[in-house]
Length: 412
Image (cartoon, rainbow, N blue to C red; front, side):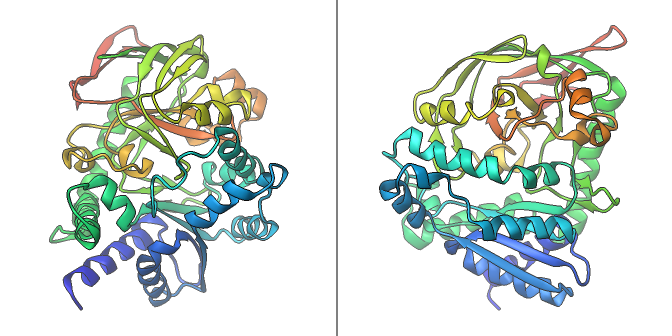
């Protein structure tokens, strides 16, 4: 077995053991691009070795998606296959394991598509699969999002390299970022998760009332409810089983009180939304919790269209902190993949909040969620706003103040 195959197996094992915490006789669903097949095969082999009852794979194809957007009638753009809906409903019912692989085959494949057509597909999928998003947010199944290298994506990230050399280089970065190159991968992850948990404990003890962001292009205040809970490193299912939502994971996150967001902010990294639409230089202004102004230099019309889906889409559902010591940030690369770019920089998310980020949030009714400012929406769109020039100060519920981040580093 060559070095790449060895590392790919380690990576697959990490996703299965740490990501979905696979147990004997559990059912696994993998959603991936055709280009991800080698990683899918590694995942399937390892899963069966670990005792999985069945590994189901749903492959997608960006070129087919482009053909649909070019030629399908407007009415048919809202179709979401009943078979996919049934598969996801069954996965929830049996408390199965869900793995989604990211990494575009060609990040520019949807260039030139009318924003209304692309947003129609995205909105229909969000609308009809909202039941699955809710189940995932409430941890009613184990799920993990992980990345894979493709030649097209690697070419965007490493424009000076060609073909296989760029793809090989991207795999090297993925393995480094995910600590696959460490002598003891498990020990390295234990240490990393311990540190993330230490930061969440510190923030939960501090009882933050307001966060003030300052830096180039940002003057933003975000309030937190007194029952807000900071999370990081991993999560627990409703039956108490630990798993990791993302690999890699470098963020500390919580749910804001969406009613208290005020100020201006601009993105520090491009957003590759829904693995299909590239949006650059996003600028937003909030007033009393609502997005009142939205601009950008590229792809912004697609975002505007999607934000029409429901009222919660124009409110914040997440605030996340990431240090510039993150291995994604230290790579110096833009990945054109939200999985990686959100783990390189502090970010906020338009749309739905995670109920686990408010005390007893999973048991709250919709009315009670509104009462504590826990946002609800069919979308969740991460927008990166952090950099080495951004600082965050906090007002605490005890009346004190504290510097949370300074120049991209935790300042505890």
